[in-house]
Structures are given as C-alpha cells and as structure tokens.
Image (cartoon, rainbow, N blue to C red; front, top):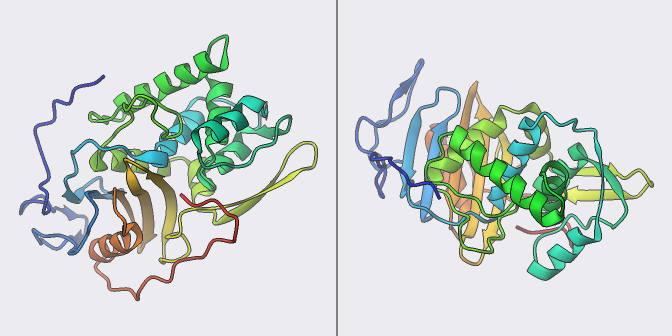
Length: 303
C-alpha cells in the first residue's frame, strides 16, 4: 500500500483564489466556487492541454471508483509493447468470473479468438469484466490465471506510481474489489484520464459510441458504449463509466473544443451526467442546452 505524502489539497467547495491559473491566451475565470451545483462527492477538472488544475471538490479523498478502473487496465495494455493484433482465446474462466461476481459483460463466448485490440473495445464500451480478465490473463505472468491476473494488477499499481497517482491502489483489473483495496481520488483519476488520451489506440476506442467486432470463427460482437455523455455533449471524446455499490455512479470524461482538451472526473454521483455538463460548461465558459442523453438499445450493458 502506498501512503500519500501530498500536503496540498483542493477544498471541498472548490479551489482557493490563485489556484485557477492562466493557460496561454485563455484565462480561466477566477471563481472560488467553480461550477455550481455539482453533487458528486468527489470531482476534479484538469486542462489536459496545459496541465493546469482548474477545480476540485474533495479531490484527494480516497474512494472506490468501480469500472473506471478499466481505464488503467487499458493503459497497461497499450503501454506494454504487446502486439495489439495478437489473438487471445476466450476461456470459460472469464465467463464464470462474470457470473460469479455479477459484473458487466462483453458476453465473450468460450473458444472464440479475438485480438487484444478487439478486447479493448469489449473492455471500454460495454465495460466487459470478461474482457478485462482476458487482457489481464494474456499480459500477466505466471503459471495460472490467478497468478497472471495478480501479475497484471501489479503492473497497474506500477503504472499508477509512474503517473504520480499517490493516493491510488488497485486490487482488481476491472473495479470489482475483493479486498476493498481498489481506490483512487478524483485528482489521481484525472491524471490517468490525461495519460489515456495520449494513446491513439485508447482514444479511438473510447470515443466510439458502438462497434462491431468479428471473431476468427465469424461470430460478430456488437458493443455499445455505456458512456451516455458521448454523443450527447459536443466535443466529448470519452472516457469511461463505472458504477458500484460502494463506489456509486462514477465517470471519467474528456472533451475537446476550440483547441483545448479538458479531462473531468466524477466519483459517486447519482447525477453524474448533469454534473459533467456543469463542469464542462464552466471549464469551457459556455452554456449549453439541457442534456439529451444518447439512448442505449434494449439489452445493452449499463454501467
């Protein structure tokens, strides 16, 4: 377990005056309160273009983050150097895992062969815990699926250290925490979101509202992105939803507009999409119409 040495805090109500800094020719409004009415227990806004921290709410409080964990899963995969066109055979263990823990699923079928790249779609769009297990099993080291999964989780923690996520620990590859040691902070998850956007592979997957992927035996998988902010707010390009009993509804989101890139994080909010709209409107200095959320087809995963 890593113990944070961070002394600086962004307060519950927002940032103190002076924490909102100028970024190039654009100057963020020096409003101590930041966006008003954000109900999330933890939230953070980061200008990914300049690296400036724009606003936060309880941004260093450790919280479970559910399936937004899978952003780190994807980050480890793409940074591993593995050939993303490498094929992986789906094992019965992946389906059994989803059934046991009641996780969201890409409905991978035993014996099908999919590439790592295709599994990234299964990971980030329908939030497939089976796809997460397949990726961890494929890229971890060890003589058993359990050992390889644990090896992969160790890689996730090493990447968190590398990114300076000082208040983060992973004990799962998908956000289903068996030991209660899978937590992060809004600030740390914003760092991860910014890093993920630096990958063209993750960016391409995360901004897809849906996809069709064909296994080598011809079976076609159709997956829909659980992130309903995508396609509902102009400029949004991802990144990942998450929902858990302890974590509550969570969202790591990103938007690009007028040459600027914004990453936001919401932890534990029953109004995560309205919260995201308020945060984006404030950070982009605009007022947009009421959100008309992109609908998901009947039977599609919700997360």
